[in-house]
Image (cartoon, rainbow, N blue to C red; front, side, top):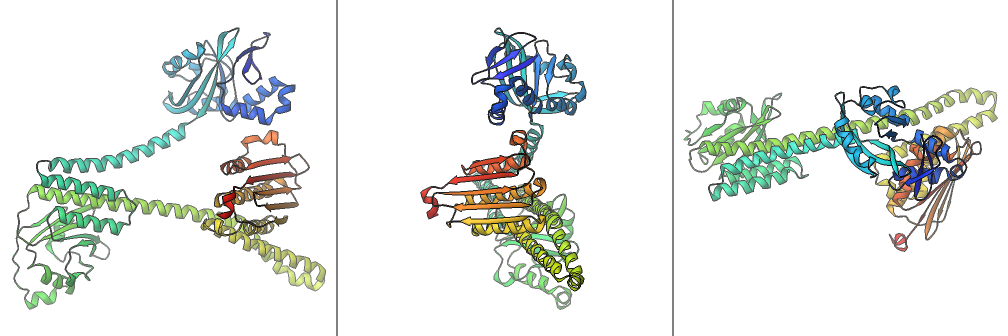
Amino acid sequence: MKIGPLCPRFMTFVSGKDEFRPFREASLPGRIKGVMSTQFPDFLDTAPEKVWAYLFDRLPVGTAVIDRDFRLRRCNPTWAEFIGRYTPSAAADAVPGVSLFDLEPGTEAILRPLFAPVFAGETVRQEGLRLESGGIVSYWDVVLVPLAVDGEVVAVLDVSLDATNHVLNRQALAQINQTLEQQVAERTQEIEQRHLESERRRQVAEALRDIVRVLNSSRPLPQILNYIAAQAAGLMDATICTLHHIDYRQAFVHIEASYGLPETVRDITGFPLLSSKADERILNRQPVTIPHQTLPPLDPVTADGLDPRVRRWRVALAAAYPAYLAVPLVVADEVYGSLAFYFTEQRPFSPETIDLAQSLSDQAALAIANAHLRLQAGQAAVVEERNRLARDLHDAVTQTLFSASLIADVLPRIWERNPEAALVRLAELRELTRGALAEMRTLLLELRPATLTETTLPDLLKQLTEAAIGRSRLAVDLVVTGERPLPPDVQVAFYRIAQEALNNISKHAAASQVSLRLTLAPDNVTLVVADNGRGFDPRLIGTNSLGLGIMRERAEKINAQLTIDSQIGVGATIMVACALAEEAEDE
């Protein structure tokens, strides 16, 4: 069974010695048509069957032909590799004639209904198709195309793209978001249900929704906690609300947020741990309730034994605020601290009131937990960036400086024997140090991306060329014609394309000479990067090349035209040109 040549509207299907028969090609993935039309224009006219066979075997998607008996007639290596990865079968089991359901046991109930309309002549597309075979779950973006002979569908062309990681990551993210939203919703709903019987309870619910909105904002943690303290004081009819954090190492209780504190005690930042009996109850995860207190004046002996901050706090607050309520604040199953309220009048604390205070404490705990998660994520990103910079420093700057150090060590002895050779080495040392400096500047650009738009494109390209000279010992020539500002997105795209081109030349071209030509005209900008290296056949490289693919994507984003011209043995030339609108120059 073979697939014949493509034409604008039809594909042909060959079975044995039958003649070519047409069937519609409109449903094939655009990737197949694009690759064939752009990569094989001459080959397509002279050897159509070879073109199809070449594409069939080398497409980066799984491709297979399944007959009406659900037997495999042909597949490419990618499809076979999918079998080995996501089924109990091995890739080597994917041979012509084998049953699809023997290869993928457990999928018959899903695949038979999916194939049915295709055997009736329809094209079926499905995204995120879930399959489970031998306990292995996978997800697929598939296109099923009917293959017909004399108007009768005899087989199906299966084009499959592995979407497993994408779907699983999306599901995991959705689950995390759903869990967080569910926690917030459950807490809010619980409080709303407790307070639906009166206007007072309605106000509580509205205030808690405001807190949830603040929790989901990007405000700094101190600002969020102070907002919660203010809202909590209002909901509890308290004059003062304080949020405490226990430092177990220092045995100290810090005041992390507050609302309504008198001016006389605002300078107090906390107290020694266990300086009151209330601390013991909080550590045992129990609320502290003092509905009314009448404290006698502090006697001199007792006063002398107290921490000055505790003594001043009690003198200022005990008489003025006879009622007190505190509830534990628990984060990650550890007592983080407490949320405390001071009242100007004596009052009883009902279970409903204590529950409300605990709910407010839980909201504060959620804010703190979210802040810790953001901090951990930021620290992980910093570590990853540090590791990347360390790798770049090791791969480029460290090696360049090591070479420069070796030359500097032997330079005095060379100078004594052969001054002319020493001058050559001295020039080489100069190039190495300039290259290392340029490499460091390039790394600094990566640390501060805004610099890519604050510096002119000629200066950025000069940095790249000097870094390439120091890193790869290439002879790089940069010529800039014209002068004009560029839109930020155009400038960044041209810089990244030049960076990728120089990296590819350094790694793969084995070139000795590289030239960069930048032309800045009033209505367009053009960059040409050429080398005298080993070259390559663009038809064989195609869109599978990661480096060339990245350059094409960057060019497409700014509506620029990217041209790649290369032949084996005669080097390569990459040109990117972008037209500029009139207003771009004003910008």
